[in-house]
Image 1 (cartoon, protein in one colour):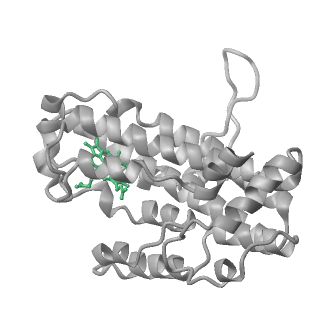
Image 2 (tube, helix red, strand yellow):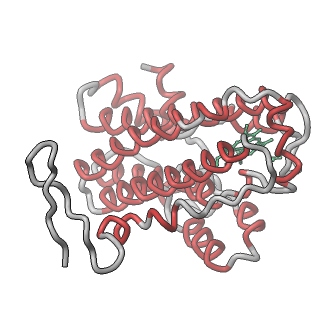
Length: 280
Ligand code: HEM
């Protein structure tokens, strides 16, 4: 049972203070759990910013995956407004995700070195939720499951995601059902493999942009382009933050570091949406 208390300052009713157990806020948000998951590995006061920013990004990844799964499901049901709403929410969330770089975007090598060795072989490369995002974008890769063999739940979730159609697969199937000429081999492709750009898919987008610039296909194309651009921005902000913090040293995950990230950041999500633009 809870009691209302008076606020002597304002004379208005103040929030309830007494609860039998944990607060309803705690029961819903689990803030106590969330704020006790920070276990820095060094004594450096700057490490907490690295750890919490990484955790915050994991939460954004989780929400964005949820939105793209929602969008994919809506498209499966030919619910374009539902898909557009989920994509729109994801772009706001991607912008917030990208803004989260700020605490890590200005590290000097000495500052990063203060806790870098404590990270051992730990690397964002091992983020399973980031792979879930990539898989939804069509960037499938079975080898990305290998690091997670020792974590059954994570591995099972990733394996399921690998074999499910990506968001982009659902977009193309939706367009085909609406009469767009998406080739059969694209529709029947092995969805567990990396999506390969297709000339006819590019033509479908190019024709829609040229002939029906105000149409629904273009509105969907623009929502996806927004997503693609914001993912590209995350990758490039990550690249610049890495370049500032560690130059061209090898990564804690064992890669060549910046040189490897440069190649990854050069990729374009939803490739035909970019190449089609030259033909409009
Ligand atoms: C200044 C801080 C950071 C530095 C210097 C850095 C460095 C690196 C490097 C060198 C790699 C390449 C793999 C390796 O050899 O380790 C990498 C990959 C990665 N990092 Fe970071 N990172 C930083 C912050 C973050 C944060 C906050 C996240 C958020 C989760 C993150 C997520 C990732 C992901 C997802 C990859 C894999 C990218 C891909 O597969 O294309 N990184 N990082």
